[in-house]
Image 1 (cartoon, rainbow, N blue to C red):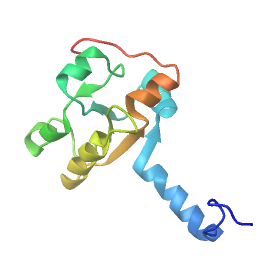
Image 2 (image 1 turned 90 degrees about the horizontal axis):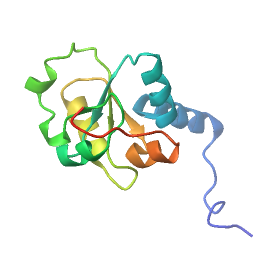
Image 3 (image 1 turned 90 degrees about the vertical axis):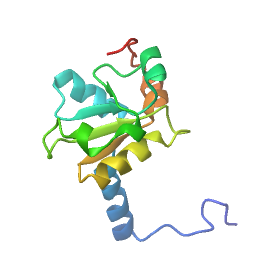
Length: 132
């Protein structure tokens, strides 16, 4: 008997390897961001939520830049090779993807922090409040 899981066969291993390897080019996770921030991040972490939500609680070291405000003139303060990591509220929110898309359209290297604020808190990490 096939279940909903096995009714569609798994991809061949070579295709699965390519698919899962490619995911790491597009996203990182809360643990890796936390570890990198503690060691001295080589990327800019962007909280793409509203300033009000950012002020209530955000990842330490994050800069607030709502996804609608990601434009060339604002990004000019960073060298073109700067890597950006975007996050939003969590898996139920697409703000991180919207921000990442805007950055990619500007030719900027970007990844999403999978899980966003929800993932950060689920891992037991703390948020800071205030303007920065």
